[in-house]
Length: 132
Figure (tube, rainbow, N blue to C red):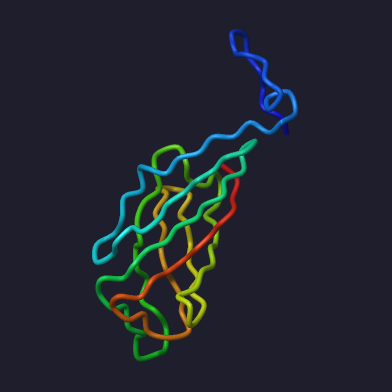
């Protein structure tokens, strides 16, 4: 859906052709025991694409039943979280897949499942696409 052009806004080819977007690379609050390596959010016509690259400073080990304990990775900037329902994300450490959720209520990005332990000094790359 093209952006609604309101009074006082400049008419540009991008706005007229529906290619106007917003982008932020700041405002992500990283969780404890993690280092933020890269963060990018882009919103086009209400659809957000999140790219997040983190380093685990401390290990996240699987529990005795083989599940990764839920771990908060951080919080999205205000106004950039999913609307309506929480959304799933997927990512990898270079060795195996990690999945999680972005909570619609507060924008918290959480890791919920992995194939194996996430050792200290391991990088996690994740991406998500959702309605904002």
